[in-house]
Length: 186
Image (cartoon, rainbow, N blue to C red; front, side, top):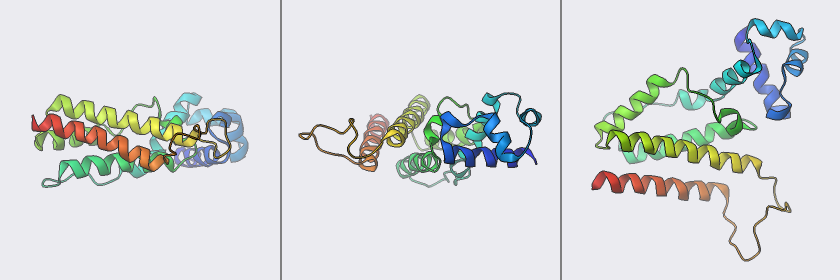
């Protein structure tokens, strides 16, 4: 057993039972070890959840960085979509990610910011747009993953149009991007 195996098993448990039911006791049982042995790898459940969040973000964290000459608008939209896809890969992915701090991703974030600034976006606008897009994406995925399906009391009234999650996400992303484009062209 090693740290990576514990994290992989914890993510499997997450997908199976959901975030509320993930516990070190359940994880230890799943790994066929005594619960205290998990403390060798993670001092607290919070440490375990942070490691799980980082591992769950791996597909997005390893996506190609923008290259000189890329259209910043296309890149911004693709980067935000990649983030959404990654959150949706795991049961309760948005809840797991919410509130986690990017530990190993700081260099990548700086390179993304530098790309936007080099493309003509003001640094403060780039920061706020990345923050807004990230929070919007997490919120959208939280709603999507909380949706229990047809017949739920949360269904919209009959006189309101039904908008699927992806269409709603794309519309919100377009609003953020259009606002950023507008500020850049001022």
